[in-house]
Image (cartoon, rainbow, N blue to C red):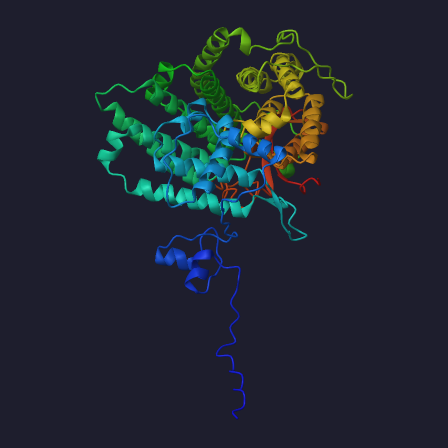
Length: 577
């Protein structure tokens, strides 16, 4: 009889991994597990299917029960009536429907109203669908933070990061959309300019969500080029196209606002106008309260900051020279400053008139439901905690639009610079601040009455309330106001909020802490800059802060020396949650 065959020795000692991307595992190839796409797939031009576990959905039947039937009926009710979507057959339909529900529930309510009914179109272009799904997955990733390990000395980085699996899925959808866009010809764009505008504007929103400023500038420039081409055509743009342009401008204002903070002094002083005249004409064709007030707000901030930074050109570094020096009136510089100031003030007057017109046309339903009197609103100078009476509105959008209006009023108050340049500016400064500080007080009232959860959900693609509070505190020398804002935002942060208005909350709190420390030294901070321009950072792909800011340069007025000063300051560690 034959004996049993001896066991065959292993041909190799290689142990196959189970964590590579699905494409490499199907090809039985080694994967370096790079994200969002591995090196092998990128090199071969293949589609990297990601690293998440692949789920296969099957139709199954269960015994009919009342509770299960109720849940089935409830799930069906989430699909919009008349839903007819041209699906991209490269993706499982169930997967598309899941992210389309995320679009309906999380993305669309926060975006410009022109995007609210895209899913109700009878025929939805696959490239638009892919872009919508990419934005939905990206939004989902940011609303589900994950913890990560940090080096003990790395205090300036958030211990949380977005959901990387959702980031990869967003990359899949956006890559599919970009491949379609890359195949466009000029005739395709001319034939269907609305699709091109929608896709490019949604890509602006996608890049803005992660503070990818370079990517945003690329897509925004493409929108501008397309609009210039349309101006040369004889056809009249439709009202829908005008609304898409309004959505693009809103995205531009949101992106600029976040880029403007923590930029260099040169960036803040020399930035060109934000909106061109042809774009303003398009906006006037379809009035939009939100976009109009955002444009006025950002232009007012740009102009007032340019005036302020021009005055701060010769600011004294208090760390090098101290504060016990005589006042410096800057002889020989006043003629230049007057000419520059006059040009900027002329443009600022146009924004003041535009803001007054905007308020005059505001319908009663958009006004506060509580008593609002900006002229007689006052705040005590006592160090005791402020008692803020909430200012409420009928809707979140109405509250935010009015917050933009109030902040624009604050930023348009530039008369205090004249008093600061005079020999007795210290004596007159409190009287001058009686004009903007009532408006600041009303912004605090809006913050006290607003639904913060709505701010987190609905301000992802527009300027957030936290950024407005920081801008206004930079125009106040009242320590009671800045202390209230710091405490209020710190409470929101400890409750679990990482960002609002796509702005990292803990960085705003760090800057507010520095402002309050300077106030205790009789130094009032009016501008916060970086010494070296970082281009807005590297984006928030794996974090909640785009910029790694270790130190800042503050500019303000020193009461002791009665002149402008600057100071380089190191940021403290991130607040514990």
